[in-house]
Image (cartoon, rainbow, N blue to C red; front, side, top):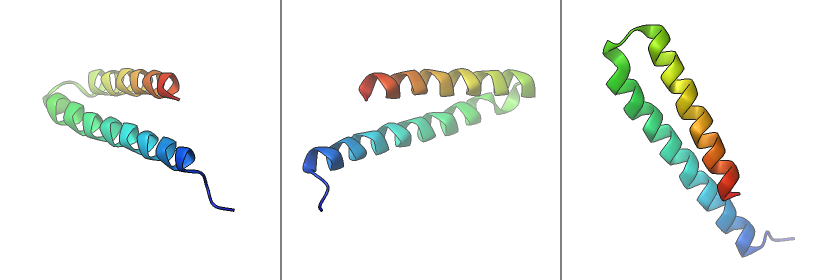
Length: 59
């Protein structure tokens, strides 16, 4: 049984969302390297929560 094209498309869009999330985390990490560690952790958590919400909206 082959997966349908729509299923593959949804996986592709989900993958692009994950790629954007990964790049934004790297970007955020590079910006906040000079800041205090606890602040950086809080920013990353906020960023993950934001993209989790975006992913749920897309799916």
